[in-house]
Length: 174
Image (spheres, rainbow, N blue to C red):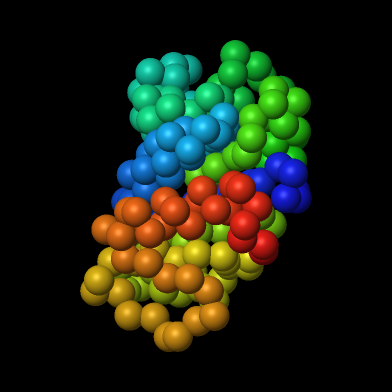
């Protein structure tokens, strides 16, 4: 992880808006000229269904991601299988494939910088449980204490997409 190869995670509970926000971030990165890779954690148990044409990884590709994968129960959906794929192995693959950066959806406990999605007030507990939070996207109804990191409403697309492009350009240091 470093300025020469930016990696950021977007995390939150199910139905918090992660995939919708990820699509916006991907589109903004592509528009800015980045070749962005994405990795989606298949956190619902079991293997992915075997096709990239369904679920969120397909949405990532439709949004313009140059590379996309989904991982769950040891299956990496790049037509490759092995034991358990670590996030470090996945990021190494993407770096080798010359992505300009990676947007990871999920893997809450990984060590990369995190964008945290807060869809409901109860979701704010994530702020105490997670490390390396660099940005928060919240619903208007979610109240949080004043933090020293940027906080945007989920509908402030231009603001958080601008933040993301600056992050990819190395203008935001975490």
